[in-house]
Image (tube, rainbow, N blue to C red):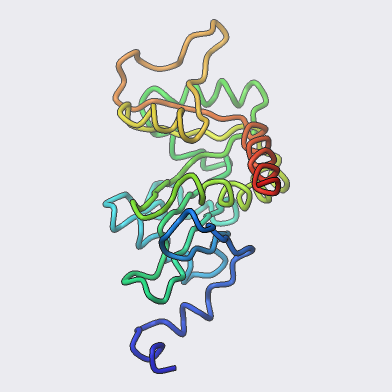
Length: 224
């Protein structure tokens, strides 16, 4: 208990950390220990907000209509649990919000509302990325699949959503498409919606892609 007494909040950390699964990163990763799962307590949610604040990203709870989405929001975390690390807390987080009467954060982005309404009219059940952050210490290729697996239990199995949407700066489009599996949506004429040189770009990803990727990554991990 001597070491615990030297770390403010450590006992609270150990008490609150009750994620769905533990994640072993294996010998090839020499770094912090991680646990991955969904934020289930106010303290865990605060760890996610702390990460967003450290990276100067906006607080999703302060956005218009955010207060009406508490029952339609899910937050995944990858938490550093190494007692020898100088920082214990969230090193990766992903916020998703289900479409509802208040709409989605992307509805307020110029040029995207019409595209979202087109998807709704086509019967799409949408979920939006409210926030996404990965600390440079977080091994993206190792923590992303367990985070997506934890989110799948809500987004696919419970909400039955068909598509995940995100509005991102043009400079981040390659990252979202290449690393996360998003793509540009197209309208009925096969064109991408919005101004050709818009600073913010609407992206989408079918949830079936997320479910397929989770199954493939899980099978690969089991056979390794």
